[in-house]
Image 1 (cartoon, rainbow, N blue to C red):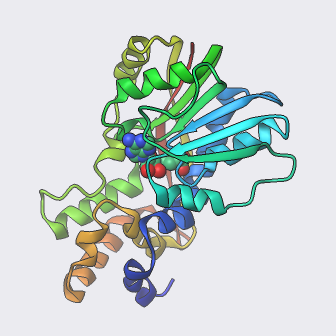
Image 2: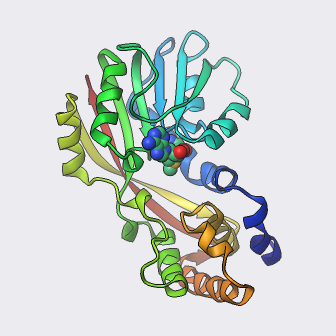
Length: 273
Ligand SMILES: C[S@@+](CC[C@H](N)C(=O)[O-])C[C@H]1O[C@@H](n2cnc3c(N)ncnc32)[C@H](O)[C@@H]1O
């Protein structure tokens, strides 16, 4: 990607669109496939995907439960739901209903789903216990819940590298990535699920490769989808050039044959009602 395009992308690309273009195929689809293996969905089942974002987990779940199944995706962001609604659903997949809604309260009936999924959503909810109780309320007896929560940023090399570059340029008090990598740890998740009434709670760690084949410039373009996108956009050209230099320097150790080749680590949760 040309540098001018990267510099220019902040004014034309919304957070949701950048997230969808760059992060979804490289991060969220592979992780959704891993998460859904744990949900062990069968044809005809019903699935609720909480914090569905652009509907990545919802669409893959719809393929697994097939045309006799049912999928509902909820998210607090109307922009994300708008992107989800525009995406085609595969042939032989369940219909998907998308709702703009917070994680608590959920606008769904009691005991109406076989499975609830929540990929990288729990760490954002202001009242996680209320959200977990809502997910449990939505599940049928013997329903199951699967969720994923990133581990800390120091274990996610490409984000850690950009975090350092951003702090260098925006100041030590900047919170470049914040919530996504500040989720509960293994023990806290177990406790919170148990407190919400879930049984058979299991939390383990997953690790998947992450490649930005567009290299450093592609990673820099993801700043448009970061919590500091407005601060970066407000920089002067000179300050932004300094940030881009810092980003290139910090990301360089991850580059192989022009691509960033790294990995991500997440906690993976499964539980039943
Ligand atoms: C990192 S994204 C994950 C999206 C999606 N699950 C995926 O795998 O692509 C986090 C999502 O949580 C949503 N979110 C944040 N706070 C929320 C809340 N209180 N209730 C519902 N959704 C929320 C955001 O709008 C965003 O779409």
